[in-house]
Amino acid sequence: MEPMPSDFLLKAILEGRLDDAMAYLTAQAERDGYASTISASLEPALMEIGDLWAHEKISLAQGYVAGKLAERILDAALAAEDAGGLKTGRRGRVVLGNVEDDYHALGRRMVASFLRLDGWEVVDLGNDVEPERFVDAVLEAEARIIGVSAMMLSTAQNLPRIRDEIEARGLGGRLRLAAGGAIFRLRPELVKELGADGTAATAIEAPALFRALYEELTP
Amino acid sequence: MTGPERVMAALSGVLTDRPPYGLVCGSLGARLAGYEPEEAFGDPELYVKGQEAAAALLDPDIVFTPFVLAFEAVAYGGELAPQRGAVYNLRRPPFKNARDAARALRAAPTPLDAAGIRFMLEATKRLADAVAGSRMVVAPIASPVDFPALLIGIESWLDALLFDPDAARELASAGFDHFAALAGAYAAAGAQALASPVMFVNPSILDERRVRELALPILTEGFGRSPLPIVFHHGGNPLSRYLGLFGGLPQVAGFVLGERDVYAEARAAIGAGPLLMATIPGPAFAAFTPDTLRARLAALFEKRGADPAWGFTNAGAELPAETPSELLASVRDFFHGRP
Image 1 (cartoon, each protein chain N blue to C red):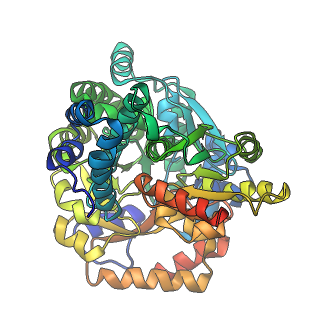
Image 2: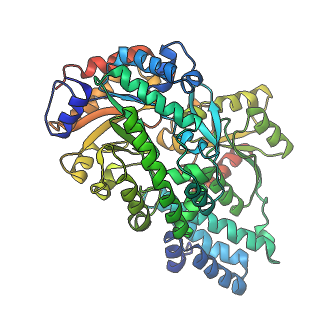
Image 3: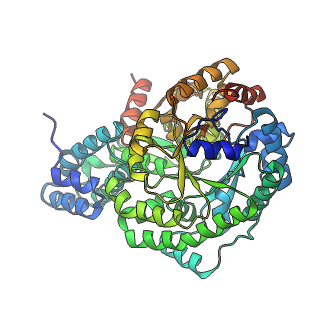
C-alpha cells in the first residue's frame, strides 16, 4: 500500500507555508533520517500535489511551493551524513535549458528541482540556449536526455533546430528530447510537430517523463 | 457606423450591423507594409503604416497600439531581447527584488520619456490621427498586479506574493503611479481604451486566498487610477470559470477570453453588460486556411447566441508575421453583415 501524505504537510504546502513544511520534514528527518522522510512523507505529498496540479485543482504558485520544498529538503539531505541512497545523479545526468530566444526561467527551474529530488544530476544551461550548446553539453555530460523549455509559440519554433543538430551529429538514436512550457500544455500536438519526444503537463510530472524516455534508450 | 460606435453599442446591449472585432497585427502589419517587425517596433511611422496595411485587409473596429509590454520594464533599466520576426521580449528585469524596485520607483517620476515608452506613445498618437475616429484605438498596458513581474522577474514576484506580502504590496503600490501616468499619457495621445493582460489574480496562477486578500485589492486600486476603460485580457490562463471574482473591478468594460474558456460560463459568471471577446490564439492563425478559419469563426459566433455584448479578437500572442494575408480578409468577410 502506498504511503498516505500527511494532512499537515499537504496543507502547509498548499497554503504556501514553506517554513512550516520544512520544519515538519526536518523534525521527521532528525528522527528517521532524510531518505526515509523523503520517501515516506515528501514523495506521497508531491504525488498528491502532482495529481491536483495535473487536474488544474491547484495553482502554479502551489506547485512552485512544492518545488521549493523539494529543493530545500534535498539540499538539507545532501548536507547531512545519511544522504546515502539520495545521492543526486544516481539516475544519470540530464541537460536542461530554455530554447534560444526564451527567457522564462520559472518552469525550467521547477523542473530542475523535481528532477534532482528524483535522483537526476541536472546540468542547467539557463536561458536562451543555442542548439549547438545543448548538444555540446549533453555530450560533455555524457547525458542521454535534453529537456527544453519554451513558453510561447514564437520561441518553441526554435525547437526543430535542436532536433536538426542532434540528427546532424548522428545522435538521434541515443538521445531523447523532452519539451515543456505553457505552449505545449495548450497545444500538445506541437511536441511531435517540433521534433520532441515527449512532454509533461506540469513540472512535478517531469521525473516520470524523464524516466520513461530513459527507459526507451535502455530497454 | 464607426468602430467605437459599434463597441459602445455592444456595451449598451444593442445589436448593430456587425459585432466589433480587431486583431493584434504588429509584426504582420509590418510585413504587409514591407518592413521587418524590428523596424516597425522602433519607428512610430512604420508601425502605423503596418497597421494601415493590415486594416486595409481586415477593416477592423479596433486597432492596437504596439503590444510591447517589455518596454515598460526597459524604461527602468531592464534589458530587451530582440526576437526574430516577433515582438521584443525581456532578457533581464531591471531589479533584483521587490523592495529595491519599490524604492527606485518611488525615487523618480515615471520615465515617460524613455525611448520605448516614447515610441509607444508616439505610435498611439499617429495611429489615432490616422484612423480619425473610425476605429477604436486600444493601448496595451501591463496590469498593476503584473507590472512587478516585469520589474523583478516572475519568480521574484511570486516569491514576494507568497512569502513576503508586505514587500509585494509595497512594490505594487509604488507601481500605481507608473500605471496611472502611462494610462494618462495613452489617453492624451488618443487611445480610447486599454488592454491589460492579467495573470497574477488568476487562481490558476495564485491560490484563491492570496488572490482575494492580496492580488485582487492591488488590481482594484491600480485599475481605479485609469482614466480609460480597460479590457481585461486572460493572459494565457483559463478565465471563464473565475470571472465571478472580477465583476467589481473599476474601469473594466470587457474581458478577452482564452481558447479554453466557455462562453456561456463566462457570461453566466459576469452577468449582462461587460463586453466578452471570443478569441482564436494569435499564433494559431498562420496554420489556418480560409475555409478552416471560417469554420472556427462560425463555431465561435454560434456560441454568442443573441448576446449583443460580444466581440472577437485574438488570444495569446499577436498574429505571426507570416500569417497569409487572405486570412485577414476572411475574418473581415465573415463578420461583415452579421448583426
